[in-house]
Length: 102
Image 1 (tube, rainbow, N blue to C red):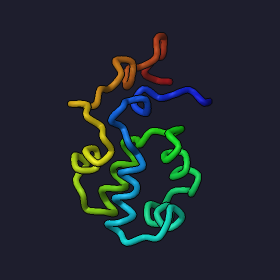
Image 2 (image 1 turned 180 degrees about the horizontal axis):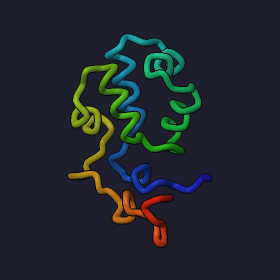
Image 3 (image 1 turned 135 degrees about the horizontal axis):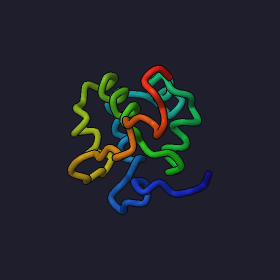
Image 4 (image 1 turned 90 degrees about the horizontal axis):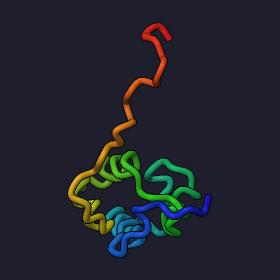
């Protein structure tokens, strides 16, 4: 489970900067307060800070809802320089051999 996610190994990727900027914007004292504001468990924030968990789409959306910053602004703070998010070619396709009635 200690495998590095490709996003977390980007040299420009800095989840600490993003979390610190959100703390400052919301005038919160610590990560515990941030976890309450984002309505996530405190270990989620810790895992993001220690780069064991990438900042996913649902987390970005939640951050957007709480801060009123656009997802593009949040990604910029995060250091995510990818032009587009890519969806897997396998994602959303029915499983081989599955019938419509399954």
